[in-house]
Amino acid sequence: MLYYFAYTLITAFFSIIIWLCYSVISNFGKDKKEFKLYYIDLFEGKYNILENRLNLLSKELESSEVEIKFPELARVKKEIEFLKKKVLETKKQEISDLRDQFSINMIDRVRDNIENLGKEIESYEMKIKRNNIS
Image (tube, rainbow, N blue to C red):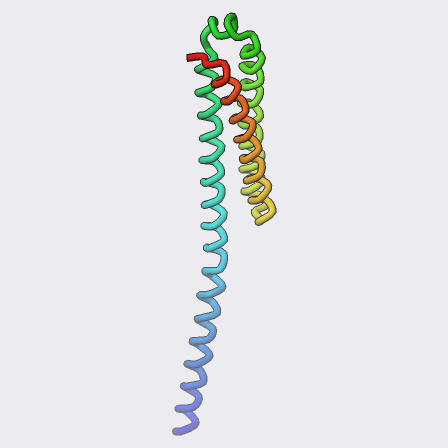
């Protein structure tokens, strides 16, 4: 009788250990997927903000009078259009890279690219403000 009791306890103990290992292993990948989705959404949002800033700058420079009064802004307008294309291409490439190969180094690279594009946009915003269009 003692033998059956010990057998039941040992079986129950190992069943619990196996169940705990299974639950830990099955939940392990979920956190990484949520982490990955969080960063993809975050960076898509940041790229959307950059695109919106560029669209606002383009709208400020749409007037034909701007090009006549401020000839250097005609060049800025072309550069902004080029930068818009660059942001769109970079966004597509970086987000697809994040989906394919998610790593901390990739996160740092995307973050640095976004910061550099943001600084570039700021320089154009300052050029436009210096000319005091409105």
